[in-house]
Length: 357
Length: 247
Image (cartoon, each protein chain N blue to C red):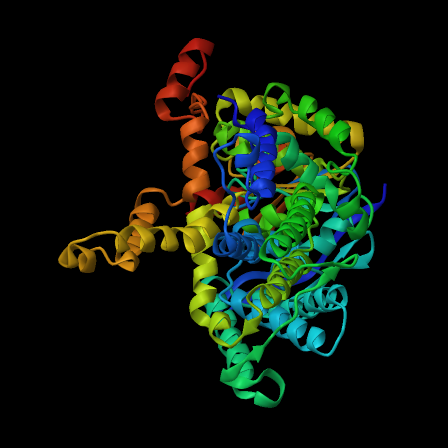
């Protein structure tokens, strides 16, 4: 089966299903009553999470850097949008400001990446994440501290209110679609190739004229901007923000999403966000239906979730996207090994040519 | 014939170890210079000093009369200096064609045009010509990681030539390549030197390969030049024989 030929039809099918998800189709004879308010909210949350995970995937999966700070960028975007829209600034302006601010801060955070790598870089971003969380929690005059900011308004688009769950979902879906298309363009451009080169062999990339420093900073800045834009959508989605979703734990979860979904795979973040956002809910619902209290306790959904993630990582380190690709793509025959002349091949060659080995 | 590279009294020490001790030489346009010497003689350190990957403790390196001290390898590459590495350095997840386009893309347009311009930076044609030149035509769409060692070595060399460099430093191009592929590689290098007039410096342990490819040989031992001249002269030099075989 050729995976490449299936990509476009699968993408279109997914897009149609997502658009139709909140609509009751029983009226036209289809067995789909449409998602209710909570289901629509969860799907919107999955979209917002996917945007942030796309940013992490750019930094980690494509450019080969490390980040444990994506939740902090969500926080920057969420608080920027909440503060601006609460004083009457249009959502579009707040959305752009959130992205630009996260881009600028991400650019600055990229500078340590020019000096340190791997887990040292992860620790730098971890420290930044804690710093942002402390600012959000302690600067009450600006952020409301642990009480957070309530009644974050939902926007109106061309006079149409996004107050209802379904309208806001379609609004989020449209923005996710635009940001996905932008990421697709970026990764298919020469920039995307340079990011891949950075991940695979930065020394060789530099020797080919690729400005490794510049591209590292760009990867951090763009990836962080996606975090900021996701935060900008998150604030009106939940309509109340506090410091908890922007702490270190959620940052680790964003990294987990990318790794489980498939780092460096375009659909990886979307799959990872399903695992992180939807799977715990499904498991929680499933476990709640177990009648036996002992079994119910044993199958705490978080235990099941943790076990599944560990199994996945042990047997499928390239993530779910990598596993699917491996199963679908036919195995290639390896090339003949011509790794240099051995004494045997040199002698055989010499005996054929009549020369001394 | 213009002077492409001047190395002036370059020295490099690592703590108390003097890897290169005041080496000076010049390379003229179109020349193929061989840089040989026993293991630990300072060849790779000298290479890395020329290429900006190490900062010399002393001395200067000039490309086309301009000092390149302190320039990063990417800046040096944009001045027309390219290299290959001792160990294979292709990008395994990219196809052969993509590897070659990547090798040339930073030399075309600005960063902004690279984002909004053509995906191949208009280099597909040039990449295909390079693929044909290095006889990799049947592998153009294959991922580089799936190629055999010798084919990857050819691709590695082809990438070094993609941006049309004036000076190419080849670090052990024959290492690990089988006899058939080796003949192909030498022939291709000679052809590209003849066609483009590009200047080569070649580090190599395969004496037969380096003596038949190069027009001049420079021999390093213990961080210093001990002999220099045409291959036939260097081959018979007692100091060279002593450096390789000992007393």
